[in-house]
Amino acid sequence: MIQLENISKTFRVARREAGLKAAAKALFRKEYTEIKALQNLSFTIGDGEMVGYIGPNGAGKSSTIKIMSGVMTPDSGSCVINGHVPWKERKEHVREIGVVFGQRSQLWWDVPVIDSFELLRDIYRVEQQAYGRNLRELTELLDLGDIVRTPVRQLSLGQRMRCEIAASLLHDPEILFLDEPTIGLDAVSKIAVRDFIRTVNREKGTTVILTTHDMQDIEALTERILLIGKGQILLDGSLSALKSRYSTKRTLTVDYDGNALGEAEHITVLQDHCGHAKLLIDTAEISVSQAIAAISAQAEIRDLSVTGESVEETVVSLYQEFAI
Amino acid sequence: MKQYLSFFRIRFLAGLQYRAAAWAGIATQYAWGGLTILLFRAFYQSGANSFPMEFRALSSYVWLQQAFLAMFMTWFYDNDIFDSITGGGVAYELCRPCDLYTMWFVKNMAIRLSRVVLRCVPVLAVAAVLPAPYGVSLPADGIAALLFPISLLLGFLVLIAFSMLIYLSAFYTLSPMGIRILATSVMEFFCGALVPIPFLPEWLQPVMYALPFASMQNTPFLIYTGHLSRTVALERMGLQLLWLLLLLAAGRLLVNDAQKRVTVQGG
Image (cartoon, rainbow over all chains, first blue to last red; front, side, top):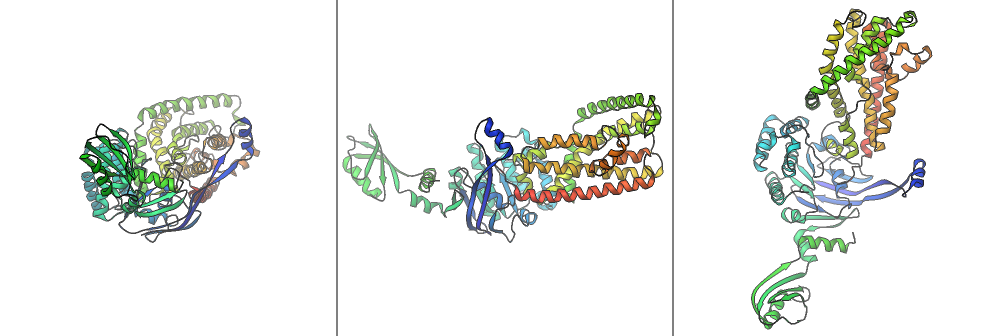
């Protein structure tokens, strides 16, 4: 159980004008600007949930993850995770969590992956038996095979990321924080990583909190999303509810025989060329079946498909709506 | 405890890999030790009575310095630690159920010891067969032989406890280079690496002992050579212990404060 209440965090950033004069002045007096990274952030995440934490760059996603993983101390507010306050009982807390920071590595660069795993085993004091079992399982699920005996520096990004994720699960954490776990991965590796995360969540009941910019990750993995912007939670809800709320627009792609389509009420023609047309409708104004009826009155439909807004577009309209 | 041991092991083994560097280091140390001794011989020949140490003892001091260089070198820092602080890798280290200070302390010990292990035996072996008074002699007496390893360990720990403060300063300054260079030059002089402390002017001595640096390499080497009487030796070892505790406490305070101020940038 993760409970955050009114968490705030401010950073001080030194700023100065360009040029020699300003640089000389900064030697004696530095000017700082305060950046409010998080403002009164509150949310609750239950055991075994899988939550997507999204927001534009600089919104405060990583700051939140760092507070929840005990790395950073907030200025005010309370955060209790499985009965621990992360920054106060750091050691007890981190024993129960696994973390992957997609942009950093927790593996030792020069030595084979397995050496890093064994060090982690000792650091977390994992029983030999549990370690052996987890290692076998992870090796199989993430298809690590020979990879674990290779020095980290010789691994591809996809291989390394699979190892990073395995490394964060060796000690059976109850909560897994994934900070951009699919960044820079190719399609195949992304799918492998997603499948694996789903399996861990389903079979071990691990709570997963995922930050990402990849909306396919969100679509494939999470039921619930938290949208953060300018340091505040803007939305907390299920993905499908959000989609239906924010996208009433549908695109109709039509192949037809006959003359070019004329204008009809509430239907915008995006393109119309040699019997192939793209039409945009807003379901708040006209239902899909009404639209189809209107088109078939004009021409003989050969083929037709209806597509909604992609998650990506939904998120963009969300960002726009909240002006973040 | 076991976690820190494994941490020590992985670091120690990694350090042993650099054999070519070790051979190059050994060669440098023969040359450097030899030149220092020749330089001092020239001074001694102009009037041995004006010097506070016997030439024999001085030669031992110089060779010990060379043999244990990796333990006491003042300019050596583990860049991984600085990178981890300035680059944000520390985020991962804080996600471990370990104590950051202990982890880095152990890491430093491991790197330095892995280097010493490779270098001290060849240097001492050659210095031992050099003709007197140019080589390394045996410890002055049984007590010196007994106290030396203890004092050596204390001095080593004092040095690491001090360099921990330099590492931790990176949390506050973002670029640790300035403090690092400043600390290195101050330490190099005040720890007796350039010139053994007894050779420095009388009036400077109290200042030297009021600083932690004299409790690093100076004390064990002087004990070995029999320069210090038994009571003074024990006093100095007490001072080493005192400095160790003070520096450990300062490091603790600093790491606790730094941890509160951690801001991991980017990502």
